[in-house]
Length: 521
Image 1 (tube, rainbow, N blue to C red):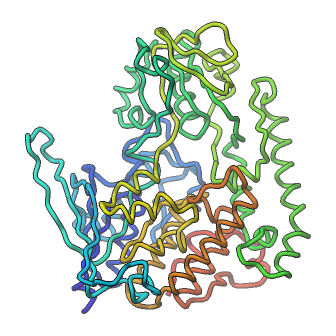
Image 2: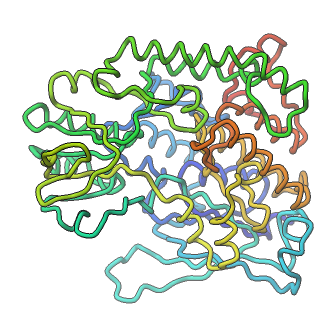
Image 3: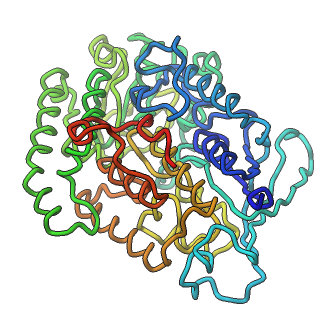
């Protein structure tokens, strides 16, 4: 079989890498997966003790591999998730394809063709996944023996690369501080949430025990870590959550309602890229329903929780937060810890370090701290850019503000796809769809459009999202409220029916999930 001769390299053995491997195997390829760590699971293999799913498990499962019956919880914890991923890898015989402790330090595109890449009309020169003249050269560093004085690198040459490195790992975003006002003047310990999550549970518990801990941020990691520290230390050594912008934090029991609302009828209310007049008019007429939904959720949250009392009322709409891929679930007992004095909330536009803590803007006294945990995100685009040795491809990543084509293909970078980079309410679900689409493409079941057509498509997406999200726009967040619409595009590309329900009302009002796309052929 011709596919046996094509070498496909997959970088990363997290959720995206496992699915990329599984679906390329099904198409007759012989992929090799390079994983820098000693095990699979990506971020699920290194996370804090209290971490669990923030998505109902029915929307966070493989389309052809259900959760075990003994997992009764709607939101399994990280240990259960990791066991589920291991079971998936064993069931589909993925583990033998993985080279563990193998860090890809850079990738370089080599070609015997003299044609300028920018002169191509079609992706890779042909619109097909493989080229007779172009290859990717991967430099691999083996990490099994970190004590070796001079580790040796291995070089692999492959026909196609699938980057599955994830957005939330490896390269932390550390804020900049003025001279003599950064962590270097602080007598305590400063670490990023990534480093805290990488610790064994007992080591992390020992680190924060009877310490005054300040957590910086208000996204998922910040809120979860602050709640965990407050639960462990109690009111005798309270934790402080210091944040600049408040976000809507949704209790678990509301999530199924939100996910059930992601149906075709809801998507009629959302403006789409390149929409015609009738679709635009329909969205305009129905959009007040979205406003009512958003306001209802906001009023409920303000009624149920003391948001105003603790200066936690966001200035943005709930729906805007969802469409901007900023979704945080309320940890258990969060407000109880605030009430009993185990957790303090402070809102400030800026802060800096001093010898015994933090100088918070607007406060006369320092915030005394022993440990500061920076839950300030990751430089995911810079990590992506740094993979390439070519400055041309680095510029393609760094200078492009638009999303990727179908959220996984850069029109100017041939023979390469990126999975798991696009944000979604259920990242496993959305990434599996693109893994299937990519496998069909690699198998030659369809060709990509011209480079200009792909660039026109991504610019339409950017224009549409910037109009809706304005300052909250992020390239990686594309299809949150248009998940079904995006899946329709993928289905059309591979030549299968995009209507997956049995009858009209279900098609219009029932939520779509992974099981609906089990047989995408």
